[in-house]
Image 1: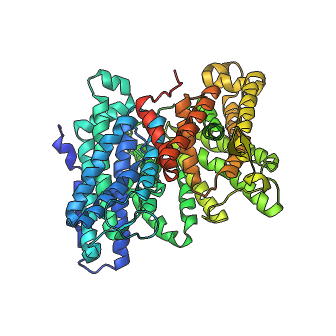
Image 2: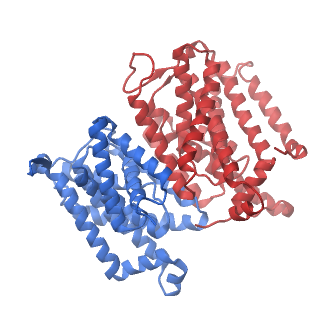
Image 3: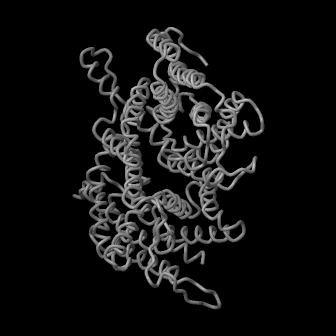
Length: 327
Length: 276
């Protein structure tokens, strides 16, 4: 993969400072619940980044991200039951999620556009039913279906989990940077603007989308596994829940689809909403749904998209016309 | 049994198929909108003692208005924004409805149980529940009625025209946005009928919408998109396959088998078994 190293550097300093600051938080005695908010922010940001990669840059509206999250989490939980250490479970979670993406790409990659979305919507439901009836190891039943405790998760200090998710999150941010400035990103941009002319100028459309799908699945699985270390318990109905899709879609859409910084801004707002509305239970998701619909109608380019547009009026050379397509 | 159930499935899928055929949109909220009619009938049954099938007299116009409004105020605008905007909005609607049901009707499993829900009749030694027979009969009637409607009325013809070529239809003086709104509203009336009969046949929870959607999608995929007859055949195949799967593997696996069929068909023949 060819990368333009000069373009990678821009804006790296603020990211570096933010990372160091965030990494120091647990050491300087920031309150526990702040760390919990930040933990959620890291997970959501990693997930939203991966969705933005697919939906924003590849045009693949994937509704099967919960499948990768659940598979990552289940792999981790099952590995701990077999007696393997947690870090191996984490890596295995990412690998199994990627393998699973390879398998389901056979049917779903035959679909395009809106068919792809509905095809992927089935996957988490399929897995949920499967895991409700499947119990590979251990005899103890916690509640309904195949719920598993992540063994040994309670022995890991909260700060370690915090740092782990920070690494995953920053990793996903750097990964997006790298991808967008490499020829993979250029190829994806070309496909997004016009798939057939991209294909005719020598870009292997299928290959680029396939790599993106599998790569995104791996990181999503990793983030999912990390989330379930903190939870300490996994069960099918919450693991393969559309709620996940809602969260990462909301984060990306609020911040701005197809923008590198979009998911970060969106994830902050989603975490904020999450805790603001936590007391109201079901109403919380209802309100999030309403917000999603309204943002999509009023400001489809999201907050950062609007900010960019406002800025580009002042500095015309930065103005970028968003690609508009209509189906 | 499977074939009778298939009639119900094709009824659920009909609205989805219509919306797809006209607007090229797979309405991800379809299952939840079907469920809305089920819950409306449930409320009317529990609070006024109204028969679920009779309650359609109120349910159908209500759903018509809701459908018209969704298309007019949300989706028509979304079509102008980008290709994925309507899909994301439909997803948002689906989440809103699911949680709305959960708040209003609690997450308990419910059922529409009028006095005749338990009755059954026998054909050639087979004991068939009455509602299954009703499902099949109603879906046949609705299907024929829709066919005639699309062929003979002005609105039906306009919908057909707009779905074939939006630009040309507009040149002929058809207001495409309005026609879309009508098409969506009609799809919601179909959803209303489907919802009531689903409620009579199966127990339901606020989360049932997703499984309704997947069944409907499976039927549409099996039957080829956009054709009424294909949808009907797809429904029969789906019902039969699911019942047989449940018979051989166990009733717990029924839904699993249904989903798997959809997935395999998508992988092997995405244009549908009867599609061109």
